[in-house]
Length: 456
Image 1 (cartoon, rainbow, N blue to C red):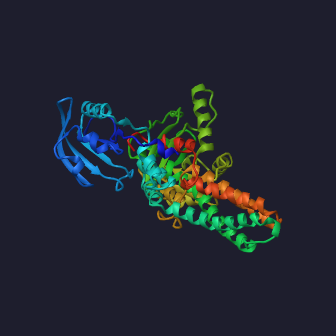
Image 2 (tube, one colour):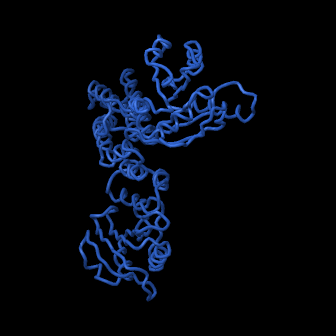
Image 3 (cartoon, rainbow, N blue to C red):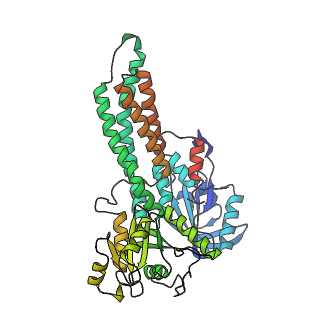
């Protein structure tokens, strides 16, 4: 078993590399206390209770390295369910290196990426999806991604998956039992109840699959392409959204030759705004390359903001632009609205799809634009307490499970023999088990945990 490979004591720097106020060095394993105790001048750590702090001196080769605070978390009441010791020292890279060297010389092994969390999973601290949520929590950069990771780490997603598996396992065992008595032609599993169960489970699975679109946005942010003709005010809009002079603004057409990307947190959602080159025919080679990049960004963007100058654009020109920009989420942004009245603009573009009139220069309606964007992502039917799938591995496993369940329904409709029925149910169970870690391979675990930072 993989668990049997982790019997030694590991050590790693848990705080980021570089100079800081403090650095934290973490150990986990049965020798953690004795290894640190061999260098610690203060209380006898082997005689201290769990969840206590101790001030003392760290000594290596007879020399004082630093005055430190040692935190004790004894098994099984620790993150890894092993003895865990954390040494808080001053944040000098030299001090941290000397402490690490002393502990390695004393018999500790340098931890691999994610090894502390891997041990926590192998020791039953939490399941695999909760372990992956730890990594998501560390990298969360918005309120939504933070809440989603917390919800998954608390086990909300795991509980749903485990309940589905338990229901399937019952019927799988009944069908397996039928196979043992195949010569007697008996049925232990009620086919109608099984069909009803599969339909009910599919509703939950499909809801989770559908949530991945939102989950992916929460985790990675919403890509928003700002496009339009030269001098429409795209760069001015980007600066207005960011509230800083990020993009060069000029009256000279074609100033933006390449894409400029910046991130902005709006109402807890991370948006990635891309200011693009103005769309027009150009003989300039560099500008043409920029326009080509613009068209590529339009294809990959989740949302496209088409910015146009209300003083120089009429309905026909705007409609032509819309026809050339087929996109599911296209927002029309009428810029330079401060040069006209609201009534005049409504009359000028009467009959067109919804247009948000703004003044990027005067910051007019910029907050309304931000609220519109966040509203496209999170509506009133989505709450942070809801289970949202953010992990592509979970998404693929759920799709595999749904396919297997479709096969089960097909088998029930066609009255296919129980051995084929049992096989499809096993496929569904395996897919769900891969999410929680009830079914794993060493390669899968290696792929997941090597993406963690060292020290977590």
